[in-house]
Each structure stands twice: as structure tokens, then as C-alpha cells.
Image (cartoon, rainbow, N blue to C red; front, side, top):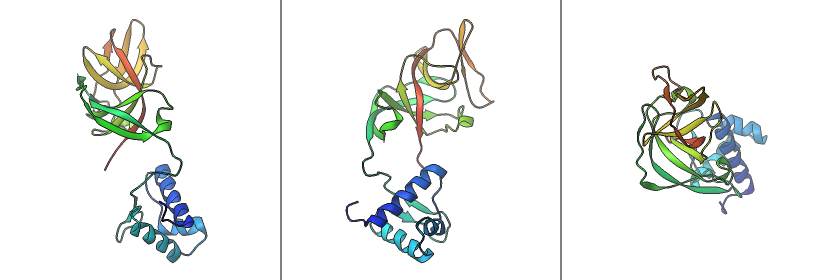
Length: 199
């Protein structure tokens, strides 16, 4: 970003943080109001950022700014292994062959070991976890009641909400179409720390 002006860096940082906070980008008018400039001035900054490859501006649609680079100066990132698929439905065999690594914000794991798994199924949809998402998991062998965990049952891996009950463990879906899984022998592999999604 060395060829961006200081104001362009500020505008890009605002668009990025607004998009992360609201899950949609600001309008040109909102950018103008934020920086106390005219709508045309804000539009000119956005077009300059588009020319420099940091964002894309959709045509004839409000809230159509797409940030192409979300890296912020001084931001810290971590690489975690991407390991196969985890079921958000019935447990399925986890393919533990390494698919590669993915880059995540370091604060997601706070320097603890972790890994990522692809989500398959829709049993956690009411918790905002969808088929095709990538779940970022903090490695830990224990869980608190109510946490969303990756658990292994009979060599199969599933993503569910954890509850310890008298004499058993209940792994609950977040979709009424799926019944809970009851077991006395579940191995906790880690707890959910974040979800990554591409559109």
C-alpha cells in the first residue's frame, strides 16, 4: 500500500472496518459524511483506490464496494493447517490429509495451537454456520457447557454444541431437523473460535 496517500489509507481502513462490523460496505455518502468531504470527493477517493487495486466498485448499486485487500498495517496473521471436512449433520469420517494452510487473524487463536476444517451440512445453520464454511478451531481436549466443539465419535468427526449431562455427553445441533447425539465416549478435539466464508 506504499503508493496510497495518507487519506486513501484512511478511507480504505474505514471501508474495511465498516464492512467487517456491519457485514456490508458503507455507501459513498456515508464515506463523505465520515470524512467531512463532498460526495464527489468521496467517490474520487474510492475510484482512486479501485485504480490502485485495493477495492472494486460495483456499477449502479448502493453498497457495492468490495475490499480486495483487508490487510491492515501492523496486523498480525497466523497460518493454520486446513484438514479435510467436519460434518455439521451426521458425523462423517474426517479426512485428515492436509489440504494446505490458511491465513487467519492471529487474535482468533491468541497464540494457541489450532487448525481449520471445512463444514459440510446444515445442522449448525441457526448458529450462523453454513455448508462450505471454514471453521477455525482452537485445539483443546476439554469444553465448557454450551461451547461449539469439534468432537470425535468412533473415528468420525462432527461440529456440535457441547453439553455434559449425568452419565453422558449431549452434542446438539442448531437446526430442529437434527436430533441430538448422545454418547459416553466423545473425544473433544477443540472449540470453535471463528468462521471463514467466501461468496
